[in-house]
Length: 526
Image (cartoon, rainbow, N blue to C red; front, side):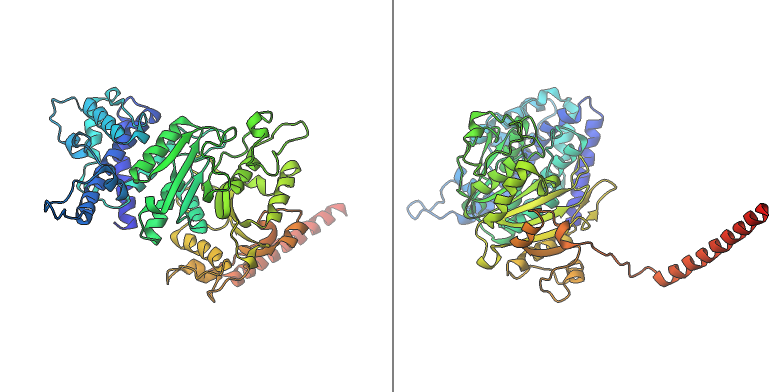
């Protein structure tokens, strides 16, 4: 399925589902969970059908019996799918007679899936009796069109993510206190920069699990390997509803992982200090009211540079708690990529002290400034930070600064993202900085505009490799704009010479009028 076909399918399904909701008594928040539950079942059926074929081809014949053994739950997990009992299969639900209570049957299907997969216990929605029967039947049919049934691979996972995004934009379960649904452009850029293709991946503020899902896409697209053999994922999430979404999201994509509902400020449930190959996160920005006197926080080994205490012994916000967590979780070759409030790159007082120590470790790899309107619920700029404890020796005392505030594609009047060319080009910058061969399309005009020779060079207004001495001279600021300079945009289609001629003509006319007025004033004085 092409990108355009996928976008069309997303829109068709969302418009149909949203029209149904508009004609019901349900709010977006009430509608969200049961709708996503049906998305999970429909996609699970598609993955189940694909996996059956794959597993059948893999199963060996028992020479004694001449028959293949029965496929197991583990076989389906290995193929990135859920083994569905008959009464949990979407085909069974969509073909129910009209006199059968469909709400009871959908609730039963959810219970059967949970029984098969204990990690989903208590997670799936089972309140379908609260929906109007006609609405529920229409919803079930909405996700049973030919285009949907024929969708393969990760198409439904991406639709699920699209629905999460749309609900976020509607404020259904909207993020509070600086927490936002992480837009795909930022998740993709983080994944492209750190390349999480093996080992332990941790997100201590995992939200709906989007970082793990995109990591799985990366492995499938670049490595062609079994995701669950390549990586082990661990997530911590404070909001119980987001925890449920994360577990559903992993199940949809056939990703095995451990998601725990805890507060990362006062707990470290996975005990992954120094063990992670990759850390990715979009933590809540600028969180205040953190209990600086909490015993766990005071003794937390994830804070080697200490908590960012104010003169009053309080913590003004949690940004530099998160930043230290991400650094401390990494093993000696680990990489981290995370979203952070723009204020953190120049924050003062205790936060500056911590930033100085982080810079001196040599583990800060790259900082990317991102412009407004990338988040769906609020307009705010941010920075992406990248750590790499396994940097090449020649880069150990260097940091790549990228100012991407003017790099975006306008999706709507309130939403921006990175175009495929821009995403590929930004990724190529860090690949060249690391001495790697960039992966580029032949017709990437964005990249060619800046790097016509195909090699890395500092570009005014876009990127610069700085050494630690320069950062010290800038008082340990990590704001890319301080280093890369201003970008001078030249519109080659604009008639500058003609416009200057027009301005000169207008100026001459104004001067003539001014002289006339001055003569009149002088005549009055006489």
